[in-house]
Image (cartoon, rainbow, N blue to C red; front, side):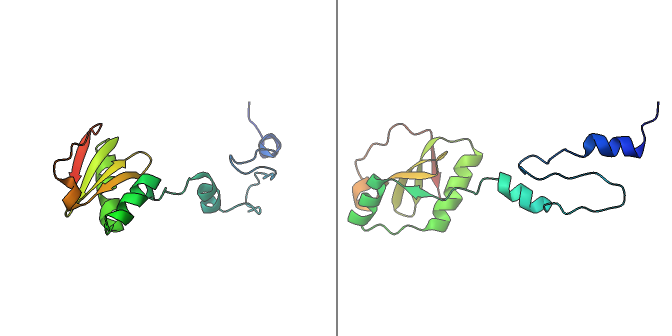
Length: 130
């Protein structure tokens, strides 16, 4: 049994691409219909990459301890920790320490060189030195 092009066209006429609602596209040999660009559909489905966030506690500590945050190095450290499957980590950048939740890309607290002495960090599964 052979299916004709007309039967195929009728069968696929009402198919809509995933993520694009309310638009119908027909399949016609040789004719290009007005349809959304693939990149537009892809970008509407992909979640934008989450930026690094700082908890209220971390913001207070950074301000009160006058800590300068190097966002590029913080991002690099978080990416390294993500690759290793870390969850809650201590990220050391120069003389400052940042306790981070890797999955949520959130800095939980920040400790400067003066405050890091005689400190114990608990509930971490990894340490990264950047």
